[in-house]
Amino acid sequence: MKRLHPRRTLRPKRREHHHALNLCRQDILEQIAQNATLEDTLSAVARLAQLNPRTGAGILIPTAQGVRLVASPDFPPALAAGIAAAQVPDIPNDIQAYTLQSAAGEQLGAILLCRHPSSRLSALEAEHLAVAQRLAVIAIEQHNMVDELIHRAQYDSLTNLCNRLTMESRLSQIVQRSRSAPKTVGVLYLGLDRFRLVNDVLGHRTGDELLRQVGNRLRSAVRDTDIVARSGGDEFVVIIPAMARPGEVEAVAEKLRTRLAESFDVHGHQLCLTVSIGGCAGAPGADPEVLQRDAYTALHHAKRQGRNRTVMFDPAMGSAPPQRLEMERHLRSAIRHQELELHYQPQIELRTGQLAGVEALLRWRHPSLGLVSPATFIPIAEETGLIVSIGDWALDEACGQARQWQKEGLSTVRVGVNVSALQLEQSSFTEDVMGHLAQHELEPALIELEITESSLMSDPERSIAQLNSLRNCGIRFAIDDFGTGHSSLAYVQNLPVETLKIDRSFVTKIQQASDRPPLLENVIRLAHSLNLRVIAEGVETAAQHHALLAMGCDEGQGYLYSRPLLAHSVLNWDRHRPAHISQVTQDQQPTLAYKNPR
Ligand code: C2E
Ligand code: MG
Ligand code: MG
Image 1 (tube, rainbow, N blue to C red):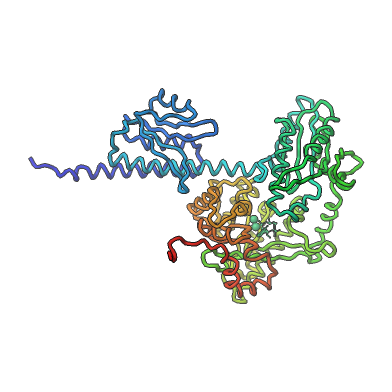
Image 2 (tube, rainbow, N blue to C red; image 1 turned 90 degrees about the vertical axis):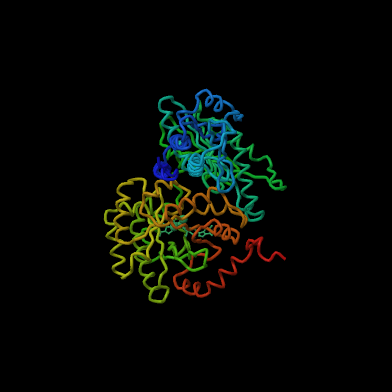
């Protein structure tokens, strides 16, 4: 009888296996991209790792409480229960453990196979195991990243206290609850007196450390059920959910003032602080916005009365600080009086130092206030709806300027224009944008509209339809300030965007050229896997430039390269760019170990 060559019988089987393995891998990657739960994804990975039905497989990952085991159906339940119950489990003798390691060398967990340690894996089993290891690492890293991003969106990264948004949502819940169990809700706004002096005299690092210590002291001075938040800069908010009497709010405020008056030891400096506090007590079911406004108004009065004191709100104080109303009135006439202007900040390609684009940033040249920052007037413009006409003006101006630069020889420079949620909600938005382009005879690809994730949230379907219709006309989109809002790459993947702009808060974490913050590196890697171009915002130091370059970030924007410039200065800046870029980035060039070994 003619003997079949063994390879002939094996080949089709191997092919089938490969095909099945590939399909399985695709399914799991799809699951990860869709943000399936880690449990579901790891359970699919465990099934993939378990090629042989007699070999149960499980994935072990560390958690804050101990470990978690996600096992395939054939993993012996008693063994699984034993491992999961132990804080630091001993791996039983009849189990093989394969570690899961991130690209940065971090131990993320292990794959466990129920088989004797001395038994060798077949080639096919080893192949399944290798694929399972890679997929498990991707799934765990993605999960950790999403967790960390959610944490960043809810907590202040400096003090780890709640941020303003979280504080506002907790206050709403507390007020809601106070309706059924009538209790007084106390709100305190705290402002550190003359804090800027600490930053100016002792530097930002000392200032930051002081804010951290103030946060810790406030946290330890109140009950666990009270909310302590940093609402921005040197301002903190304390919410006391349930008090028997309104008078207790002031007592808590005085206690906090006494605690903060004790000196702080910051980097060897003994620092003394005073604080101004504004407080109010809300009856059950009070309006949370009014409570915040009242406490803030009281803080204003505490400062005006000479600081270092507590002032409780009194209706005679009125409401919103007067400058704000005035600002609103002035803003209405700003367009008519041509007081708005656009400044342009260069964005450079990190690898080559070429000018890749500019971002148009609004400025308001007020006749008596001088140059007003958008951080002051954009929120008012958004609240009052004025942003629709201001944004439309900015878009028209930016299109005209882009065309002008094109004529002057700056041909391929893309202009980023910030667009607010309210503009996207206008049914005529697509038409308006296309109208400006046509009027200035500008190619759509030269305009990149910057939107934030949160601006799409109020009516996601409608906003996405709006983006798609503009995308079909050739307009590009960037997600702005990524890392400050919902921060979901899984969500971004469904949007017709080209670019991800990473918020400055990620970049400020980089202190040395060799730093590789894992979260930042992961965001860049995942963004690239979604074919997004990545721009880092707020690059201020050469070390940050080099670290971003090493992490594969595509472009940078920040004071290191240039502050926002007047339109006519952009050409001039570009002319001197090569010398300028090499000058600002040459410090701290990472030394290459293999170069010039002498
Ligand atoms: P954005 O869109 O994230 O713009 C970047 C902001 O970071 C700009 O602030 C820019 O001047 C600042 N910046 C750039 N590099 C650095 C750096 O190295 N260090 C630091 N500390 N900051 C840097 P700007 O011009 O004050 O604008 C603030 C925000 O106002 C913008 O943030 C954007 O959200 C909004 N905005 C500006 N122009 C417009 C506009 O035309 N329409 C709308 N809707 N919003 C605008
Ligand atoms: Mg922007
Ligand atoms: Mg930004």
